[in-house]
Length: 91
View 1 (cartoon, rainbow, N blue to C red):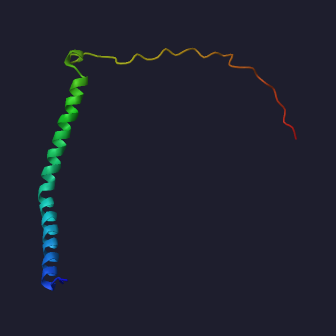
View 2: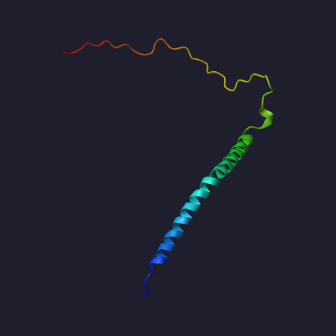
View 3: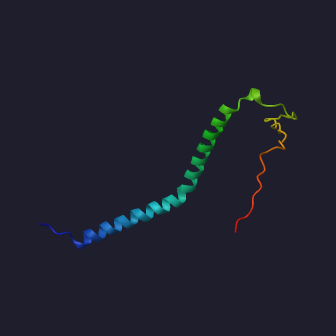
């Protein structure tokens, strides 16, 4: 049975701490670039999907007024809505 030496244990702990703090420092440096890159990619992807749904031939000319939805015709309200029931309070 072999026993681990104290120096080997301390060296392992030191290596783990150095790797942890090294990754932490590198992430602070490279994370903004990575996030900026990913946001550009997502913007391109969403922009491409938008262009697929909005073809150029349906675009109105500049200065032209376009009505997308016609307002609904309001139906005149019927004065005779229902039957009036007279009631009395019971004590």
